[in-house]
Image 1: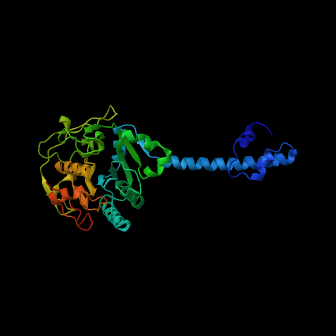
Image 2: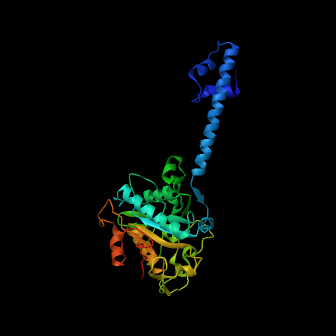
Image 3: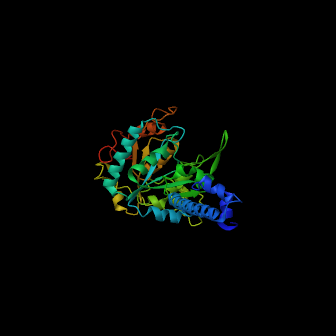
Length: 350
């Protein structure tokens, strides 16, 4: 038996082929009938194994994160939901010190509240794309818990400097909780220690200018209708400059909305988002957080987006027991109690 499948089988033994049959294929002195019978068994076993591998590859392909090529296609995925919430939280440096049980309690409470408000499967998470690394216990781990608990759609925005890690099959488990990701051109700045990457928040040199993933998550197309607040730096004047690789990416202006109403859901005075159905992002949820989270929440509050805050213990307490954002939240007079949108999930009001 020469050439074709037999020669392929001789090159590498499939795991499902028995050693006895495999050795028979290499036995030049075997009679034709015995050789042929062994060859058929090997071919059948190999084909079954290859079919199984093909199915597994197909399943793996379905699990792969979809990389959107443009902001337009990314936005199209988001607008299919009734509500988008931007998630903030402790990064890898601070990490979460809360127990697994406490974190799960937070996740379940939020899921119940959001399902009740928007409908199950009708809301999605938008965040900065932190990978799932159990040893780090950061926002990536928390977002994955939401995915497991609610099966909710998860969208991410990240810098293209890490795109290769997302595409590496060896890292698949780190990003399998993300459904879609949009990469933007990486921006950097000079610090006393050298070149640093902007992962979000404000530009260090231009006041009020969001950079990195934050510039996309708070893009006017997603937040228009929340109100632009007092005249500061308008979006049309350069309030957003994401440096996207997508030539169709354009900023837009927002309306000035000063009307304050009593929100029927929270019972608090807040900006009336219900009058603006085009406002896709309904709020920012901060589960702890560092300096980038502070910038994002500060910007959200300035344009009238509700900022919901839950104090979460940090593993690294250099900036406080609950991370840097806790001090900011207390300064903004945000009350923090047991987690519940309906009772204690308090929007930040200017």
